[in-house]
Length: 290
Image (cartoon, rainbow, N blue to C red; front, top):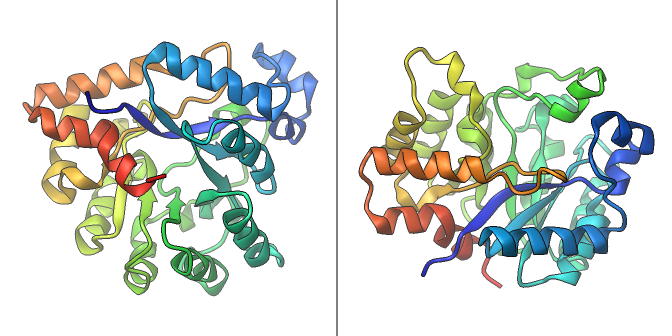
């Protein structure tokens, strides 16, 4: 039986909540306190066991929190793959990224250009692609399209993002310049589906992650999740789609409904079982081999 792997889970650590107001924010949300990184890692491992998930990418969801995910990876190295958010506009970013990969076994650098307000093709970001290229097995994750951080919205916090930096096509030149670096664009481009498909068609190292509810579909008249998968498979092929849920906090845990909806969408368009196995697990295994 092929593994079920999740390429997009957020590791909402204590450090993450401290950046949002600490215990007060957790109480306001009605969520459970994450405790130590090791304790949270154990909680996720148990949840994955309960849901039949073999491995998952855990994303450190604020810059500077890679240590929390590194602790989870050390705790369960066969279950977790470490992703970490960075802000390329910070002066020390190259050395900190290199250390996270070399010392802490992180496997993907996560960029959010709209959040940190920079063009992904400029030198500050491009140098991180150089770091990844020098370390085979390292991917770059780039959030494009609509960016809405649900936890910030629930807490009434401002999100001064700039969507001018959200176009997947901005990745074209840097992706071509780093052909050995796997690049992951989550949420099918999060509303910029056409642009994400164009990028994927032109750059064989670009992958699309299928994560979340894909509510961006509302921006495309008449589009359905099944049609999204059909078009993505037609352009990217079955080897460059990575299943993800965008799971993030407890008590909700792993979002089974996302898996069920995406599985049903693939069944609706009649894909072969071998294609589903690639999307739901084998592509992740290939990119993030032990």
